[in-house]
Image (cartoon, rainbow, N blue to C red; front, side, top):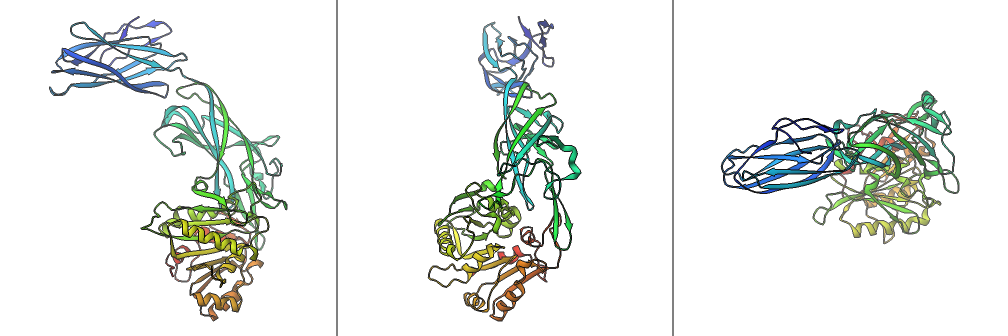
Length: 535
């Protein structure tokens, strides 16, 4: 059966019902020699592409285009011949997909009644499994499941989906086998009891769904859909120096349930069930199947390797580093809970969000910097690891485009132990640092202060007056200044740490650093201070 259409009218044929239509007329010369279908793609339930017409001579004749084999609507947009020098034109073609594959044959009838053909095989609407990856995102309170990235298998435009297109539920199992489900402090938020569905399952509250690229970035046309859910924890001050924390149900992606002691950061696993609630163009029916669980995008910018002597190390390389543009190196040592226990590589990056040093604000302040984040074995940071860490730093400097005059080191809590050991070492393989930071811990004796003074680099101390681990910082400051070290201290008043959005216990002063909230009396931030240090 033959179907065709005029310049502005589409021929429609559905369920065997044909509407009368006039053949589509296009402008050509009497010498048409090519009628060729180009690349087509499925977009929002249509198969979309172009057919190119080529001729010799002036395009002052007319030819008919017709087509057969379609079971759904066909829309053809003709071209216009604008001058006598034009030798080709393209027909825009849209063919409505159906549940069956179609073979649509387009025919151009020349002035002399000879015919040229172009065949377009139209795939059926997608009907099969659709795979999605679960996404994790870090903020300073912790690590969370934050949504999903769905590979739709077809191309969609921006208006094809919205936040009501899907529903989702999840169940999270901690590293130690405990299924999340309790409500209260450091558990699920009691204000969100309505999210609970029983047996550890909880409704994911979808706040947005949009067409995206393979990296989850919002786009006008793409093959992926990104689902964003409510995931940020709620915190509140509690007493003189602590804070309460309440998680959105079934979103916490890491907790301190790993290691032989059971108090080391460990990744949780998640089961996610996604249901399509509204029609999606191009999808006949689908089953949504869970695939991988993806780390925070910044996490994936780190290379995680075996460290000398045990444990791991994570290394971030700035894009602008080169032999002609050597960049500073910032080394950061984690606290007690972020030790490596065999199943949490990179746990030190998310346990207290050391990822912030690879994030935009820090990288812009230093105009691009290497970040080295060693992760100790379960025995932690101590003098036995000093030579291992020296070896690691020298290795990174030798193998990368590091500026040797801008090597900075810092650490929090237990990490101040290794920081202090490194900055006071006097052996032949010592590191020539340009600055150091001690946070929520650290005790610098008069003798150690004299060593630091002889090396000639500044030190910044950060802590909270109600944090016992930071009680030695005032004496350390006095010792450093007495020795002639350019030393600063930011000692916050008693009470829980507050970074402007979240509350933490008094020990967690590193959150002030990660958010660049530490300022001196002149308003200079700690990132600005670090960026200007050089040997």
